[in-house]
Structures are given as C-alpha cells and as structure tokens.
Length: 367
Ligand code: MUC
Ligand code: MG
Figure (cartoon, helix red, strand yellow):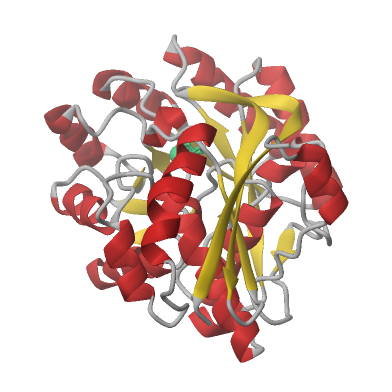
C-alpha cells in the first residue's frame, strides 16, 4: 500500500446559479481532484475546494502545494501510516483543503484494501443523513421560492439561511418570510459569515426572536474578540463557529474562550482524521456539532455524509449536503441523489468516489 503517485487535477464546472453569502460568492466549481495511487494499484479519490475568502487557498495554490511539497514528502509512506503522513503535511502551515483531500483519499485506500466502506471504518452509526439546504442571498421572495422548490423536489425540511447583509433588517425580513411561508415544521438556522458587528448581530437576534431558529453561525468575526464573547454570552441559541474554528486547536480556543457554543465540522478542511479529533473534543466538552458544507461538489458531499452518518453525534442534526444541486454537472460515475430529504452513504468498499473518465476529460483544466 505504498504511495507511489499523487495527482492534483484542477477542474471547473459551472453553476446553474451563483451562491452568494456575506464573505463571497461562487459561480463555478473550480475544484481540485486529488488522487493518491499505491504500488498495489489502488487509487484513493477526494476533492479540494479552494475558498480564498475562508482559507486563502486558490485552485493554483492547491495544485502547487500538492505537486511541489506534499506529494514528494509522503511518497513511500502507506495508508496505514496516517500519523506519519500528517506529521509531514503539518510541516506546512495552512492549506487545509489540500491536506484534507489527501487524508480522505488515504481513508478511501484503506477501505478498498480492507474491502469495507469507510463509513463503517469510521464508526458505522447509520447509512444516511437528513439534508440541510443552504439558501443564499436574494430578495426575500426569491429565497422563499427556492426553499419551497427544494422542499417539494427533494423533501428537505431543514434550511440554513445566509445572513450578514447590510442593513441587517433585510435578513430579518427574509427569515420572517421563510418562517411564514414554510410553517412551523421546518428547521431554520442562520449563518452570517462574519458580516455583522456584535451589536448588529444582537439586534438581529432580538428581532428574530420568535422565529424558532435553532442555531446562529459566525454572525460577527471571532477576531472581534470581546465583542464576539459578549454576543455569544447573550445568544438565546447555540452559536456555531465555522471559519473561526478550522483546526482542532482553534476549536478548543474558540470554545474555551467563550466565542462559540457549537461547532461546524467540515471534512473539506479537516478530512476524516482531524474531523474525528474535532468531534471527540466537542463530545468531551458537551457542545453540539453540525456537518457543514464547504460548497462541495458531489465528491466532497459524499465525504461529508460518509463522516456524518458514521457518528451518532454528527447524525443528530441535518447535514449540509445539498450545495451540489446548484452545479450543472459533476465527476462522479454514479451521481448522488437526495430522496425524502435524506442522502445515503455508499455501501461498497472505500468511499465510492469512482470518477467518470469522460467527465473528467471534459472538465479538467490542465490539458
Ligand atoms: C458556510 O457554512 O459558511 C461559505 C463560506 C465558507 O467558508 O463555507 C461556505 C458555507
Ligand atoms: Mg458557515
């Protein structure tokens, strides 16, 4: 199972409609396909989504760091030596999605070699997750129409509403319109991507009191250290850290510092190995977790559901697993389908991220 080659292949697939939120917007899935090959002919597959507004990575930087630094460092190690692999990768600061894709590709190899699904190797709790859909910025009536279409088409009943606009009252209006149109049975929570100040966030939460929101995520920057602590201490609902808690140490810092009371776990940035560290820390500290989405394509989404379904705590809340619906196509040989508001894991050996070679040839950017 020795690693003999690591490929980092840039590809681009257009979106049907852009997803807009307070820290950026996405029009095209300009991701990197990561394939780790072994001397026994196994190939582990995962994807890295560049999110410059969150991690500073670009498609070019992900390809470069894998080609020039990570691949040479891990050559000759095996999928059973993930601690050694991570010791090498961690010599380079940052680059979370590049590191996470390598980690998940190694788990894919492990599963294939063992003839077992990765979800079972991770924990094997269940075979599916309820899906939460992210509603991006638009006028309130368009956001409502989108949520209704998603509920009718896919049976999804949990929505994460993007907030953080100026003035904050536009978002209050959108959340109110969503609750009125969708009724009491849907779950709604909000994500500000650091768009508001602490005082705007507090006013917005107060004005949204009564809408039955379950969580508030990254309403203001964690770098506003005292303002954020002040806000979190007063929040009537658990306050999720997402982009402020991207590594196990940051999770500890934000939770113990009073800047968060719940955590978004994203396999796109912590892979499976470090996501388990984050999850176990959260379980030990007694805070809730949500499986987040790094605006993943289908490969990344399959990784997220594989991890989320594998563990009891991550399965308690709907996972953010539907961003791929906005993308016109994908690379998976067997596309994902959301039915009755749920997404299933793959039952076969490994992750189930087999790639359609014709689609890869069509969308790759390096030839
Ligand atoms: C989310 O949960 O914030 C948007 C920016 C990012 O880092 O992730 C997405 C979704
Ligand atoms: Mg978020």
